[in-house]
Amino acid sequence: MGKRKKSSRKPQGPKKKEPLPTAFPCLFCNHEKSVSVKMDKKAGTGELSCKVCGQSFQTGINYLSAAVDIYSDWIDACDTVAKEAAEAEKPDGPSSYADLATGAGGRRNSDMDIDRHLVDVVDDDGEAAYADS
Image (cartoon, rainbow, N blue to C red; front, side):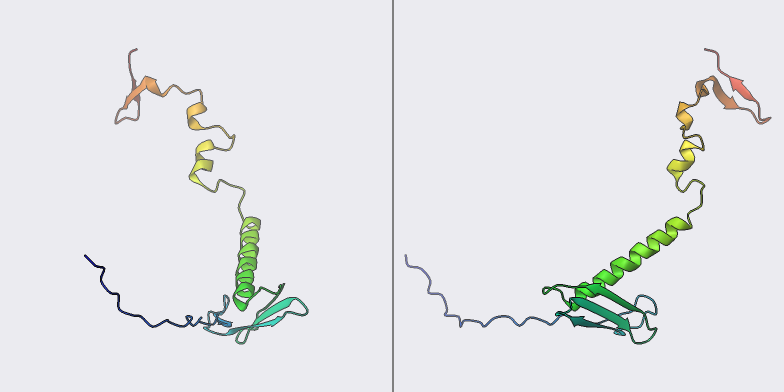
């Protein structure tokens, strides 16, 4: 038996690459395409600014950097500042259920010297009926 003859296909050219965006939404005023990025590769700096609210950011770049990299650096810097501000405003009290379980002394309820197996049922009067061991 012979092989089937494959239909001849024409060679396709290289796929066209979609250019990366240079205008982005602003994190502060939420306007679409209001943040523009300018790169000075000779000086090694990238700068972005919002046309609406005037926010600006500057960072160092290299020869491989693109506008998206500068925008992502800005997002990372904003997240870092927000986390630092949240920790500065953090109250001294417990912040999670695990902190509540440990209590102020750092001991868990299960570490305390209370024998919970002695109490079986709490009556309607609020008094406990103790089990006989």
